[in-house]
Length: 292
Image (cartoon, rainbow, N blue to C red):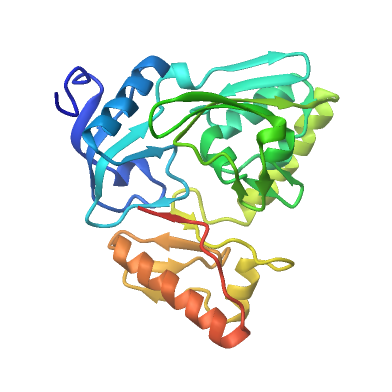
């Protein structure tokens, strides 16, 4: 039957992935799809399974580095409106996995629902945030999650309730191919006070990250009781450069990709940082950034 038969309107071949990621680096996807709704998504995943094609889900690309040679198989992006719906009923917020995390947070705040506001400024989609249990010192997205609807690599749909969910530091048990939707049980609060708190978190986060116009990504998880950025700075690695990849002078856990940068430059710089921090400080850094 073929991988694209019946999906010609939503599947493209040789799609450049650089424009879909924060680093703006890397080669093309062999196949790239933006399905229109859940039924089409499920059918596409099942077709890929039948044809033996690997499938990856791409959110806003804030936590992904695509290799220069590109990605084999199918890359799916949940950009259609059907995957970004947000509904509020009492203290419960239900949102699609393709919804931007920031929009989920601001919707909750405007409805006077507290819990997620400390996460403002964390980039990406809700699905990506749940997969990696995005968080700050003020908490993480997992602590408010009461259920999730997922799609497996074989195209089967299932609901995961709270007692089936496990969230740890930058990880979760939601490791299925797609997080289609999730529900959050939040706490009622004054919308004006919530908005003030959210703004403070936003300002603090933006002040500590690379400039908005820079192509950059956060690389390592924080070791227990320590800050990866502070360790990298302590090792004397701020502004260290390989090719067009450079350690940010604003936050050492970010690598900035300058115009001449390649993905290989970033990979080599990541290896250098890990080895230097280990040699100089005796700490083994664990990568948070996904490499495709």
